[in-house]
Length: 458
Image 1 (cartoon, helix red, strand yellow):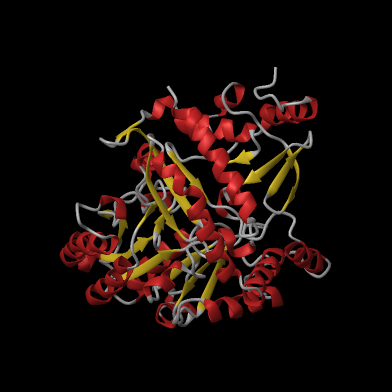
Image 2: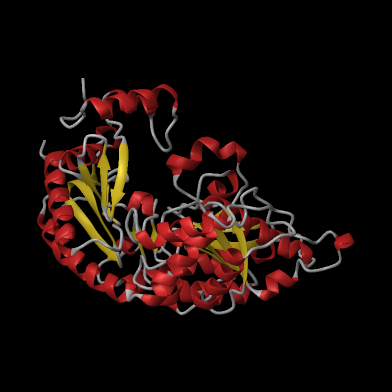
């Protein structure tokens, strides 16, 4: 029997085959037997996805935050098709190609000043691993071998591989693997929702910088780098903070001789209202990781950007063994580089950021009435990311027990009405592709409101 009224024989048949062999990410697979239907898809068009029975779903989360310009975008697809007839992939050690070189040139032109070198990998976690290893190795090459530790923010998330997991701080993902992970130092999050009466978001940022500075002062000789997600801690319940924190952190890292690593994997490429979130603080990190939207959501690719000072620490005679011996089989994949170049061209040729600001303002207006819901609190927005908390008691801030799975109720209710929303626990958020229309935003928010009502009515 179908779990949802729109199952249908075609969907059911492929879902059954899938569940016989496929192990899906970030999922308790038993849920697919009862609570979470498997939805087979056959095509996409703009913000819409279509299943095998012809039912459509508005992709309100950009397919895990990767899709920028819609599904089946002709420009992005065309770039891949053109490259496919020339070169699909080649070993990137000792060889190079035009798509990778041009992508590096174009990315350096738009990146924060001083980031001049691009190290290619194939996903966001890999980019974090590169940054962590590069920072550690830099200090070793400079004769400061004691600098081996990293500082992370409470509630941060940087990926699922062991190095990336270690420098994150979301217990749900990290705790079980703790015996396998390196030890890190943790500073309080500058999350603006922690404001005390009368405090602004900037005030919170300045207050939370005090313990960070103290930590850096106490451990500077052993700290290699501080890693942060600029402005939005996405997997950490979409917590948001003021750019003042980044400015103060940049100053502190300079003062104490520590690398600042910016994880722009989720927030880069226009999500926060600027091309990179760091721009809003007017800072350049020492290392910056990008992925997700880099290819417009089409193919896996990531890049860790560094400056000349870090690059020069590895540049020497072979026999001195100072080289950065890190590699991935699909480093610099030509197809992924070609579509990433086209993504940057769209930003260069179209008023994407300006258009996004108009869409973000419309999203804010559409979501404003949700603030009156008795089980909604903490509506917050940074650019094209808007989030809210479902709470049991708004007056006291009491939350729902995670075992009640209110977020899953929202997911299912919205899916039945053709909207793909995937809450993070009790946090409902929107992060749609940039080609969404105002009318589609209204539909997305209206259905989400209905889903929240249905999930909190008992």
